Length: 338
Ligand code: FAQ
Image 1 (cartoon, rainbow, N blue to C red):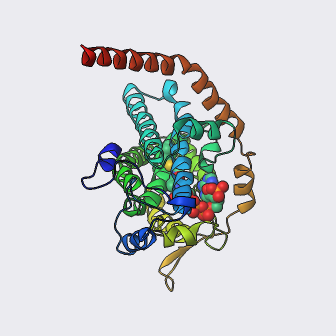
Image 2 (cartoon, helix red, strand yellow):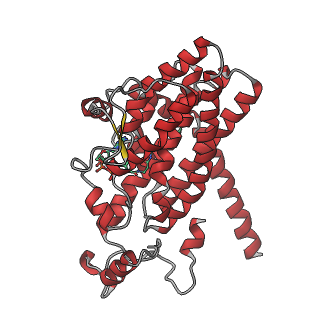
């Protein structure tokens, strides 16, 4: 998908970054601005401001890390899913998340970042990943709730990214959103089954909703007034809708689902405000968000340690793939020389 973007006819093969002394080549900034203003796509070979490139690498790589770390809380339940069918569905979902991570790392690589540096930044704790994946999954209801609410929030945030100004990111998001939509439905169906089950199962669903609600609202990022990057990212066409508006859209869409499930509201202040045409909600505890971002959430250390161990244990696979590629290239060269 990404190499196609690089091979567009009439375009230089190599990304045209900056001119001498890091200055934009003549007309490049104006072309970039016009493309963004016309809601067109910036492609990897196009000139782009250095800040735009760095912002995309930051956001896309954080997003990729989130998908990959996001496999861990659900992976915790693969061996304990309550039936063979549930296990097969969960495995497929987790594999989808791994695939999303791969598209996203590939999209970040089109901007000149190397996979190694991105992965190193995650392992050293330098790079962020979504706060939500630092929470534990003690019951099966957590798996339903992750699909229902976490994937639901992810879709709300990612559908506007399908219109992001950077072509490879926007195109990756189209497929990711289709898959997340299946994930959301499978999660909701798990929770619905629990809510229609025994009182103990319904109580388990309620407890999971109560635990995940506030962390899910934090997934959308700080309030617009505190958001460091929103203004510039919006001007560049990376962000199309602000953090607060997306959070509100998610709340408005989810409250009727909570009612349909017959669960109690996780926030006593959730009330329909007819004047605003939205649900009002209670205050979000941003000190908890900050703690999680600072590495002090319930599972931060465990998550990073699991990723580092997976990377170390997979070293032989990377070595074997490189050895195979080198042998193939040597054979190809021999054939061409003959
Ligand atoms: N967690 O100025 P803003 C998924 C950071 S995928 C951690 O508003 P921005 C699939 C932010 O990076 C979920 N950090 O930043 C799945 C910045 O720090 P920095 C991931 C957060 O970028 C489901 C600082 O706070 N989705 O769930 C968070 O304009 C189930 C200031 O914030 C994406 O990554 C947070 N929640 O807006 C997988 C979507 N929020 O970098 C498995 C793409 C903010 O300066 C199972 N990303 N921060 O050090 C975005 O849309 C944006 O990056 C936002 C943040 C909206 C997340």
